[in-house]
Length: 198
Ligand code: 5GP
Image (cartoon, rainbow, N blue to C red; front, top):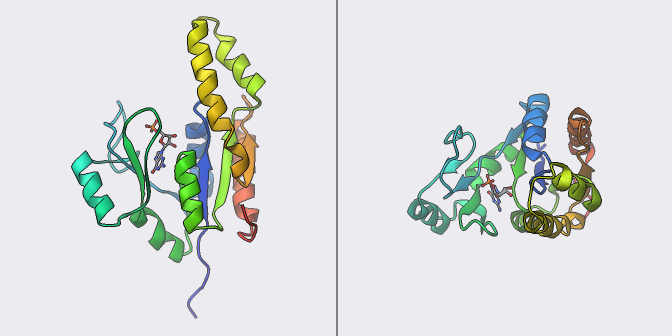
């Protein structure tokens, strides 16, 4: 009899400084092959060391728009502030879920809320660097930045942290305890029943 079990759609967001990249790498090492990362498309040029098809599908603006018109994306956003487009491709998500493989999306807050409209059972997780006071302490830690730069970064982080309560789970990534954070994430993903409303 064919299995009716579908994979879980997991959405992870968090401000820069929350340690998302390291956490995602370690989580995949722990949970693969039953959890796969969705590789987003973007019009942003690759940074040094980034690999096409692995870090992102790097597309020209024309190609991005063509795929958008063809309905190939679950969501697209011009991510606030940098002028580039990002999008989640259906081809990274739909087949895997129906094969019983869970899919991890590492996307911004706007994209996350758009996906939840389509997948209300998605497991939404916000990774935070701790309290606002802790973030301020970390940003001031080096003591080399001008006050105006610190204030700009704090304002950006505050905006992102304000969206935290829209996520089903909030996990604090304490400095020096990354392995515990990864284990908590793995537990949350495994135990989520998919029943609860956001
Ligand atoms: P970066 O350019 O630094 O790789 O990513 C910038 C922001 O875009 C991050 O907050 C990241 O989570 C977000 N992002 C990456 N891929 C997607 C996507 O497919 N959709 C949306 N909405 N945001 C994305």
